[in-house]
Length: 196
Image 1 (cartoon, rainbow, N blue to C red):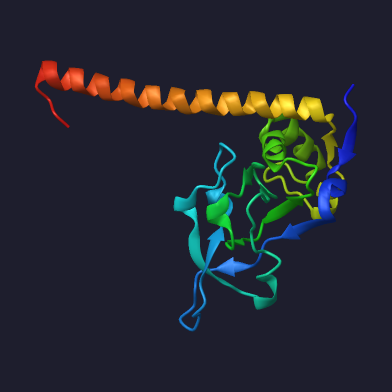
Image 2: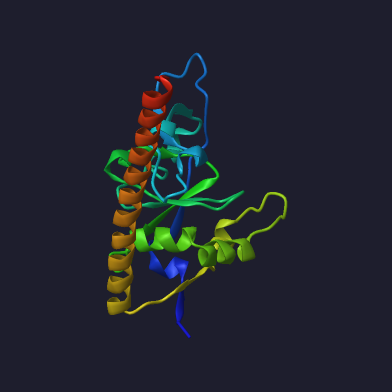
């Protein structure tokens, strides 16, 4: 059986950081910020930069707390739980409400944590801690109690290598599928005289 540790113990300062209250800008709002909301959390564990919105922050004192840094894990706190790893393009963006920032210490790999939180096992663990059935919601207090499987260094390195190989394979498979679709369209166009 794998041992575990609490999520809170893996975070810098033991803190889960809340997102800021954001919204559409009013006429008097001059300061707009790039805001990562739930729609920007991709199913693949990345941030979809096309879904980042320019919004106003309702409370100026929340800006610094909700500022995203490269390597942060962004987690939705309601609905279908989803995590995304913040890349360099996210640096300085603001995280919206209903999401939290998990900023891990140097001994924890944020990419592996993102994979775990998006896995069936991770989502089941989050669901167990949530309230509500129609729209499950997590509280910060409940999330702090999340138990994370503890792997030794060799196991973490093996898992990271396997996941990197998987991501490379997945990328190649997507490119191959796109090429196959182009070939099919070209064949149909060539033989039926239809061009798109």
